[in-house]
Length: 268
Image (cartoon, one colour):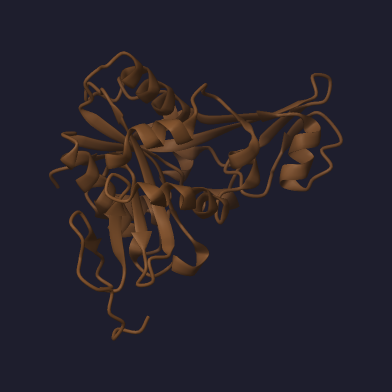
């Protein structure tokens, strides 16, 4: 990126990244940017995660819009959206046992909390997504820190995250608990996305399973993953970190994804 490009004066609530031409803003300050978030997600998420029937009964767009202070967007010098970080408020007792039932559970618990007018003390990260053109440039750490700041601004003492290990798609048949024990030749945590979270102060609290459940008909799954799915059983699917389970008699495919619970102190 041309270091000589000017981005003009910094607006209130904006944070520059290490690359001065790129900044992170909150949807509370720039609500119109919400329209760009679906394109960001579609640029990276597998189709089945966007189109399938989720394991919660919540309008996620409405939930995000109800909590704009918890949503952050990465912008370039031309005000184009490069990425988005989504999180929701929760009430958590601080124990591993008290963590939500994964990603779906966090979404449902947040919606229920807001519906009854409860007081949150925690935020749960749902997604940090960078467009392919923004990947590998060090922005992911800025987004994690931005969600931590957003949580702190909202009065949360912790940011929890059901982390989707980025390289687990290469090893979908390996149990996640085993995957967590893997190390590089240098002795570091094998998965780079988990390694980044831990390097920014996060701690692993265990495996969330099932964290995200996605259901669809066999015809729908065929269109989403490009496989024939000719018989009942388990299938390794593109973009999946666990197998898809197909039941030809019931005409259903069910994908149950494990995630890894990571907890960040918002003061760190």
